[in-house]
Image (cartoon, rainbow, N blue to C red; front, side, top):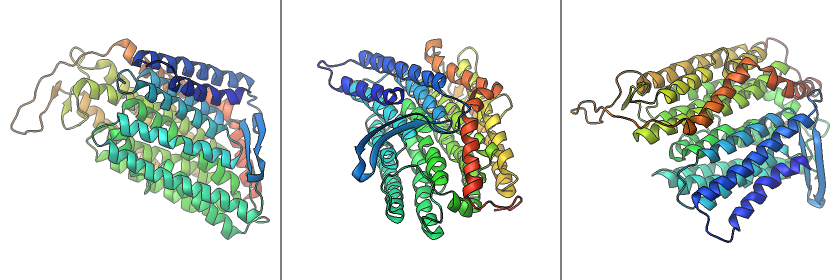
Amino acid sequence: MTLTLLLLIPFLGALGLSLWPRTLCEVVARRTAIVLLIIQLLLSLRVIFLFDSTDGGMQLQEGLYWLSSLGLDYRLGIDGLSLPLVLINAVLTLVAAIVSRSISQRPRLYFCLLLVISGAVNGAFLSQNLLLFFLFYELELIPLWLLISVWGGSNRAYAATKFLIFTAVSGMLILGAFLGLAFATGSVDFSLTPVTTLQLSMGGQILLLSALLIGFGIKVPLFPFHTWLPDAHTEASTPVSVLLAGVLLKLGTYGILRFGMGLFPEAWSVLAPGLAIWAAISVLYGSLAAIAQVDMKRMVAYSSVGHMGYVLLAAAAATPVSLLGSVFQMVSHGLISALLFMLVGVVYKATGTRNLDVLRGLLNPERGLPLTGSLMILGVMASAGLPGMAGFISEFLLFRGSIEKFPIATLLSMVGSALTAVYFLLLVNRAFFGRLAVTPVDPNSGPLDIRIPASTLVEQLPSLMLAGSVVFIGLWPTSLASITESATNSMAQLMSTLSIVLPIGVTP
């Protein structure tokens, strides 16, 4: 019942808010959502105490026969791959609700949508039935579209529609692959059972796996299916960007690991060299595109394209160390990207711009944003993989686990990691160092001195907590490794026993 409560709390909370007999003001709606999300977080933490870290299989399983004739049953379970993501979802949804301080337009609907998204993400990470996963995967689509289209920026209609189209195509490809699998194998139980050549030819496996890879690749997003992400982030509000980068992108990487590699281990081995090349291209493209940006938010958005490519590289190698690194990367990217987007939101609220050609000297200790600048420096160092931060341990593990199988792709991805330091140093140098000023777009005008209202410690508390988490995982990686290592070892063992193992030293 514990896992079911992780779904019921946000869903029933959203239903309760929507059916509240009186008009809810922003403060009451926000406080109610925060209380519900704190309960969800506490319940997620309780799962850790019920979880056996030495067991690499599914635990705390719950099931209920539903529409068995259609293959749709209610089956939930959790392992070392899904538990960290459930925790990240609980933390970042709570953070998004806390930083939603100025929702004057339809606050009841806004916080209902946040709760629905949180419950749908939990359902997707916990589902042990392919159709049930798909239902939860699609359930978050319309709420996020509404969050962008109603509370977004001036070009929100275009960004929201683009997001909707791309994600709808993603869902169709995933559903088509699941239904095709059932049709080809003659089984309609839609369980998470690996398919071998004894059940389905290699050609059929590759076709279905390709559909899943493109479907989840859109969600990740990987190059060239990434174009919806920068627009969505640019127009979305700060809390929505926190959810989008920190939580929702992980549905794509989780799907690649759980369903792509998990369902088709033999076909995965055949496609692995190509997947490693795809990962390296995505990493390099995301990094180079980020360097070209002058909008701080778009720069952070393009960085996600690169950093999510690391997960595909680790999955292509499918070694115990690389798979462990992939989970670390999903967790660290969730925390770091959420931190960076919140800090960019603070800068935009204080100055009215995110343009790196305009901002200067925000680290000024008297009239600038010294705390925001300090946290930004910490966040970019973590994203660039500085030792002692969560980003370092994740990149070290996935590069170490991948280089023996795919040395060229891994080295190219390392170049992308080095480029991360370049574009984030450009961001920090342009916006936070120098004389505090806003340079007008008109070249004939001189710099304008500004006095920025200082942000309070209460406003920065969520950012401080995320920064502390990034350092904590970096200094004590066993806190996460102890939870997920058994599961990633089991996944690697599955690949080695059911797949065509590539010889050591084969390059993509």
